Length: 442
Image (cartoon, rainbow, N blue to C red; front, side, top):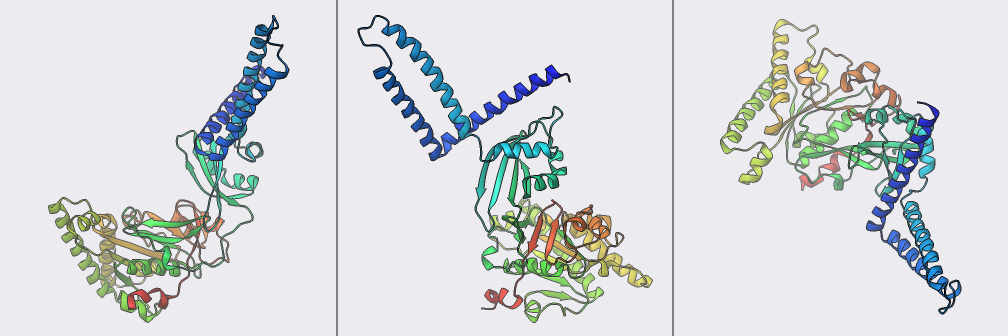
């Protein structure tokens, strides 16, 4: 590209930016009371100035050139007033700090092939537990993956945390959800019953910058949680299971340590499995229930258990199978032939549930701290669509998330801090196990 072509491109870019500013100004005038007031004041001021011009500048009424002067001055004034209105709309459509943000994005290398940076169009805040500022930008031809790859540079340059990125109302716009760079997630966040979601089977995982992170088991039926010892994965799993109990699900927990990690109240609310043979029998019964529900839904023409319950005012409970250390459960190292066959049958049952459980309200919540890629079979792991990882080394992070981000983004001494497969860092909730179930005890 020669110098002349570049100059033409820059000129066109400047015109485009001005057009977008005016367009955004018109949008604000249409939707914001303060912006409308500004434009109305400008119009009244322009009319007042025109009246004063007629009184003090134009010739006397009987002047022979009055009509001529009135036409010339009126035309010039109309052009100036129109230009002033466009300028007013442009200023209204220019968010606070827009030019600084555009320059900073240019400096961090977020530019298109012509060397142009994105344009900030809107900037607004979302109130909440932590104030979130949304930056809506014209992408200017910069593809979405480049924004994702440059997230760390964007955060450093703008001195913010980018909590989420998503496309706007069209593919030319992107929304950056940000919080101040000096903000951080609290070290401890306590669970409150008001956090419990009212949606059919939506569970709250934790709190990120400005929002609660949730999982809808009606859409994403199974999850895998990883994390090294002391990362807080067991507490996160318990928080999810507590919500399942409150939502009247049947919760089955596989715990070959005899359930000692769970207080007595858990044994009142959940079913505990402590032996392999007992586990196989339980999983076999779950599969029988899965087949029963499958035939029933087929006969009734229902797509899933939620539709069936709603249509027939019935209540098939959702079944949650949880295991805090699935690697210990499925590890066949050093086992006899009979024991290996038993574990293989358990593995087959889990694989069937992972493939077919969603529509029939049967869900898996599996956790592990062992960085062993050979423990979870492909059929099970591939159907655990929602992945969460706490503090972990590269190997465990790769097993859970298929990348090393948990090792890179979560400090080595952190507890209760997690990263999901979408790249969102969040803090899990702490809760008192006795008081959490107080409503069920009454």
